[in-house]
Image (cartoon, helix red, strand yellow):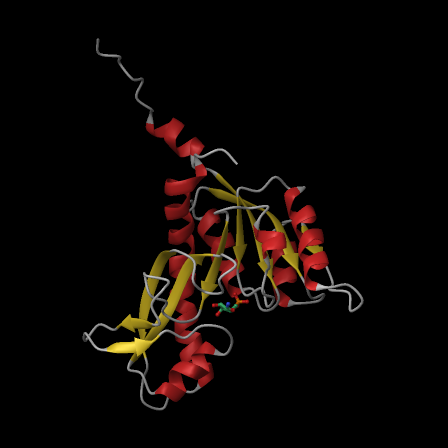
Length: 228
Ligand code: GRF
């Protein structure tokens, strides 16, 4: 017997893929702004329901306030450890019933104490190319040569010091293995003669602003319909 399956209408599909976002920030918030703008232009089927910072008074918070997005600041306490902070952060974020947590320049490494609350629901934007295979420590560049994978902090500086011809940016799922989660989207950026950390980072950020909304849409297509 053939059982007819009811086909989803595009509207139903779209509704399913609507994403409630929490964006975690620590600084300028240009990626946050790119998301606010992409949503306003109707290019991303999402709503930012929370902007959370570990630092008060940062520009990212002003951007959120201007856009009418609820903001919270959770300061790390010197007396308590990383896990206590991460648990408290998870509790705050969970209260907003988010589908996806976006680390957009959040300058803290999140431990399993946070990540366990949002399995496959935390993504990070990283200002360098990361390999598709998280086990690898090299990335293949457009001319077929290999570059080291720059992980951790100060990766724009690492790329400049290594003298590579190309670097880029990557959006990936965050896991307890730092900068080794599955890749959602990448973009290559050439390193130009005379580049400084500032000029190169500015060009990388231009690409970040393009790929972050695309990566969220890709994430929604793959994971959002699955129950939490
Ligand atoms: C971005 O370059 C991102 O890759 C890195 O931190 C920077 C944040 O920039 N993780 P902004 O706060 O979004 O302007």
